[in-house]
Structure formats: structure tokens, C-alpha cells
Image (cartoon, rainbow, N blue to C red; front, side, top):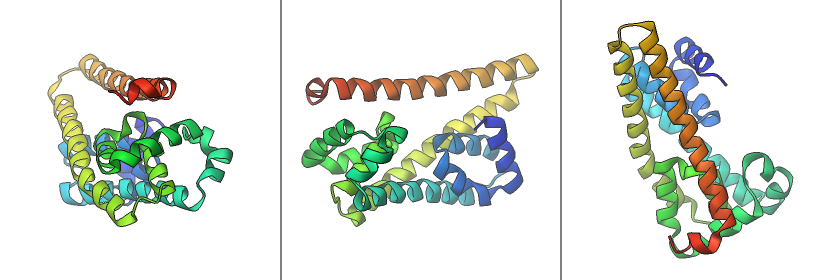
Length: 202
């Protein structure tokens, strides 16, 4: 889904579209919302609430899939969403030692490629739901604030540059950064899966 289409949706439906959009798309919605805050299209409080609602709905969804369907979901659909037996086994091993810090860190770093696996495995491992949600809610405040701040700063830069070339260059830079972060997350995930022994000592 292109950034232009996402922007059009947010402009057309404003707060009503934020929660479902972030549920489906994730972090890019928060960045775009930050830009729109700077442009005075959105207001801070309702925007924060809708962003948090959408992200936490996704947390509940993946937890429920893990606890309800578990291994059967991995076998049938796991390959389509990046959830494999190897990644779940590795995450389960980490949960045995310190699942609280893993869940919290996953929330404030978007999982670095592991977010979906961690949420799904939390359900599969029967991590107490109340504890799971408390950790996610705590991390959500930091995550939402960080993304909105970045988006707001980008929006400010966008309003400050004076010509089309500079605006285009700024947009291109943002796209490159986002693609690089996504690529790094995927690389890190594949590296951990291929080198589980080394990762345990990081």
C-alpha cells in the first residue's frame, strides 16, 4: 500500500481510519500521523489513542492466534507471515529465561523483524494475558511517542524546505531509511535463525 494512498485515507477519514490502518499496516501509519500533526490536520490526544488502540488490537490478535491455533497455524499459514517452527522454537527458548523483557523490548523496537513471532509465541507459550498486555501497554506509550516525534520532525522539515527538488529529496531519504530498517530487521531475523548458538551469547 503506497504512502500517497495511506495519506489520502487519513485525510478523508481522519481518526476513524487510524486504528484499522495501523492494525493492518503498522508503524508507517504512526509516522504519517506525526507529519499530519505538524500540518495541523490531526490533533494529538485522539491520534495517540487511535494509534495505540490499533497496535494493541494487533497484539491481542497475534496472541489469540498463538493460544488458540498454535502449531496448526504455523503449518498452514506460518510461511506467509514469517512465523516458522524454527523462529517459534528459538523464541520459546528465550521466553523460558526472560519473557518480560523480550515482550517489552519487542514493542519498543517493533521486534526488529521478530514482532509477530514474539506476540504469537507469547500466546502459544501461555504467557499470562494480563501480564502480556501490561508489558505491551507500557511499551506502547514509548513506541507511539517515538514514531509521532519522528513523523512530526519530518513534517517540520517538509514545511521548511523551499522547493520541489528539496521536498522530493526529503521524501526519498525517508523511504530509503524505512526500507533500510525493514531490510535490517529481516537480515537480523534470518541471521538469528541460522546462528541460534551465537545469538544466545549476544
